[in-house]
Length: 194
Image (cartoon, one colour):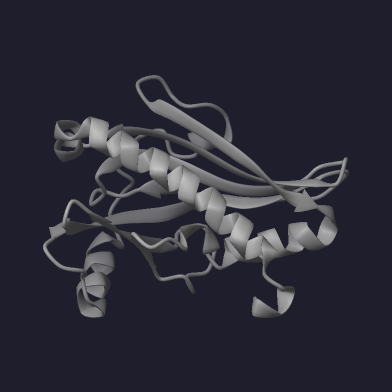
């Protein structure tokens, strides 16, 4: 959905309510656990956040609070949405002098323990999203004590996004870069700010 000005809270609530019972906009739900299905473009980005369990715990908390969306041109509605399968969010994006609202639903949560730790989740697109596909956000504490933020997505444009596909791809690349920076900033904050 496109808007000439930033959508207000009531508009976002109505938008999310209309998406509540909608199916995912793609058939390959959950495929971000492995590799991208045929016919989709895959994007994989990683950044080292630091070392040790304290860094991992801050990174985990940052994901739970959707801090990877802390950027000037995107608003996530709502950052207090619990990270659990079935939860819906709206991603508001400012671009080219207007705003778009994009609906997503959490598909699955990852919470792995053992010699290494991994926490995260994936969300998938709903019918009112410019793209079709899934994106996974994870933080990992490896056996060497390094902590990584990992983004993996597969997507293809909806009909309207196909018209502006080069611009859409540029936005996806910008999101990945800004998301990595947002996670670095969130992890550098003291744990009391969470």
